[in-house]
Image 1 (cartoon, rainbow, N blue to C red):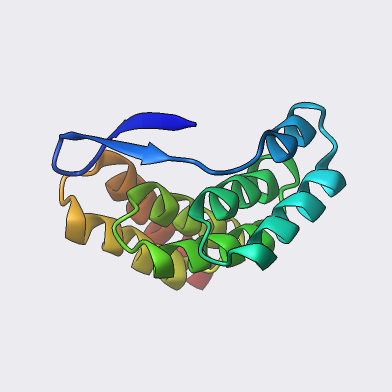
Image 2: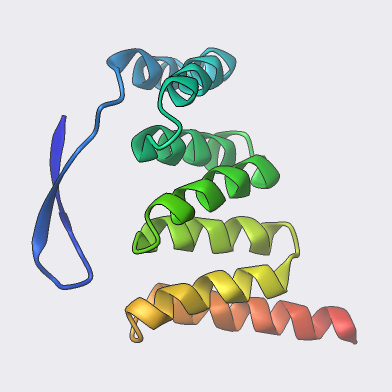
Amino acid sequence: MCYWVPMPSHKLTKITLTIPTEQRNWLKLKEYEAAIRSYTKALELNSNETAALWDLGLLYYNDLNDYVSAASNFERQTKIDPANLEAWKVLGRSYHMQNQYDKAIASFDKILEIDPTNENALYWRGESIRQKESKKS
């Protein structure tokens, strides 16, 4: 499967996802445990498969509200692909949802190093600072 995606340089870049249809079918059917097993197996075969890390991280974040597991997947993904703004964004949001505001702020700062005008990162960085400050009072 190939997709054309906008990159920070505002050029379209072709990326290829090598995830078998099986995993995505499990997601469509909301068979989350089967999807997790399947993605985990794919990652055992290739631990640098960013598409599997992405899908598995989103499954944990969006479908299971398991922000610890989501963060773990996105931490791995950002180590493999440190320029992936979307992975940094969901990593930051995962930390934010765990009330780990310093880590969330650091994740949004990474985005802003690459794209200083990224509105999403600016918003969530500010929101994390606000939440952190409100916890102090």
